Image (cartoon, rainbow, N blue to C red; front, side, top):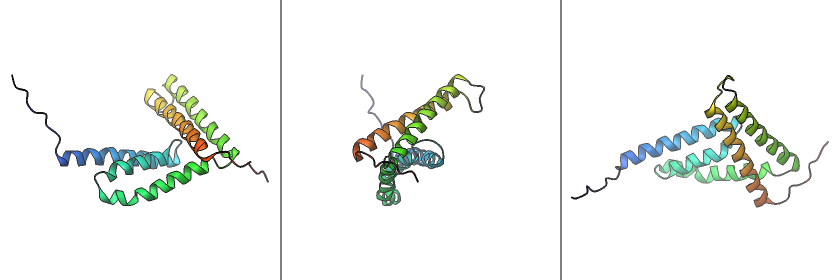
Length: 143
């Protein structure tokens, strides 16, 4: 018995899937720029996905990379920023647990809770990566 050869998706299917995935990552990243979460990381991920199929996105890749690197460096520039970022990550994880356990809260449930927990964990992981990459922060100045 002969097997039928596996079919690969055509170029138009790949472009549509790339546009959907990249667009969703980009939109989620833009939303997370003002909400708690790793916004610049998702914007960068969206542009990276889109740049594989769309040359116009490739033009903005360097700029988005620089903004993401600058944001990561600024997040660990002082001890106060590190402490605030760690506190934000921990609060996000705790809020995610509460939203998961108490579904009667607005938008409560597993999806919201998991999203908040994932955002908090990603924030802490990226903070640790930025700290290791940059080194010791300057002491905070209180005026």
